[in-house]
Image (cartoon, rainbow, N blue to C red):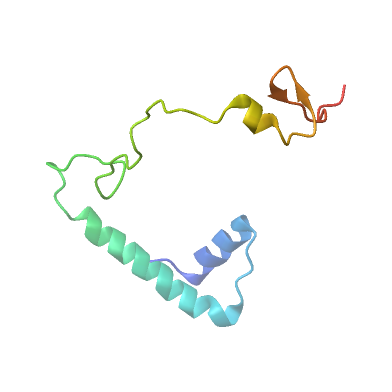
Length: 96
């Protein structure tokens, strides 16, 4: 499948992109190269290939979630400008 300048102009119009005439030949070659590569990929036999969500095997790299001692509440609140019943008190951000 080949793409021509008229199709590129139409796609650019629909995409609201401005493609200068001096870049049209470069754009045409690049798009035709992509389409040729897709045609080559379509020729591959992929019947035994399982679909993948990622190109490489992905594994979780986070550490295990373990309960550990945390900062004492009084120590955490000692520099708070305002405190209310053991919690930081902040200015209201939602207006009624």
